[in-house]
Length: 331
Image: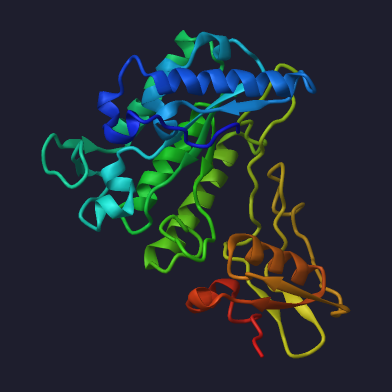
């Protein structure tokens, strides 16, 4: 991804409905894209390169991408989807708006409200698919590079379910903005402090499993290239999340739930995995264990038999429950 969420000086002061057709800053951005791509191509002719439109990768700016990028089979067109923003962004919503419901066009305003439900979300995405078709961009080269909703918004689970299923049905890849961030958890669908967050994560996984089942239990092909490679496959957990890990005071740790099976969705009979963790023989110290990388690394190392110790920043101390009270040992 060459530049994440690029924007121009003009766009910093306007709403997306006012994106101008001519913008010197946008011209400069695409010239910079061309220079960067040229340097990459000097060394690699086939590497997939992701570019985003301006206005922070907004899909309303896709129509201004020059045609020289659209015809390159090794360029992926990515956009970010947080529509409607007064609903999905915490600082705009503030607990006032829900899905489905009437959403104002401008944040902190009651004017120009529009009713948003599953049909409107799907229609908005369909406008992107139609643009791609007219521009001769196959859906295998489209990517919703970032999407999500503040988990505290009413109906957040329903919104995400609709968004994910619409993309899967259209054979377009989607990446949820959902990090285990220690300082900002508004989009943390797995471990956020709001009671809704755990249910949202359930909905996300169940939606993926349902779609995989509808596809005759075959891997969901969310992206591909001319060589029919690089497919993105949906995983099916063998048990509901979160996966609980434990490291007792004895010399052994155990994974209480079955190991996740990635790749093709298999029969429950074939997918049964017994996973025993060997006695602790090695020790690991993770600096920043409550962060996204730290928590995933801790889980991985515990499953490998490591004794894991973590250092927590003072501002993150209240979030140490994210790494699991059953195996977080602090001396």
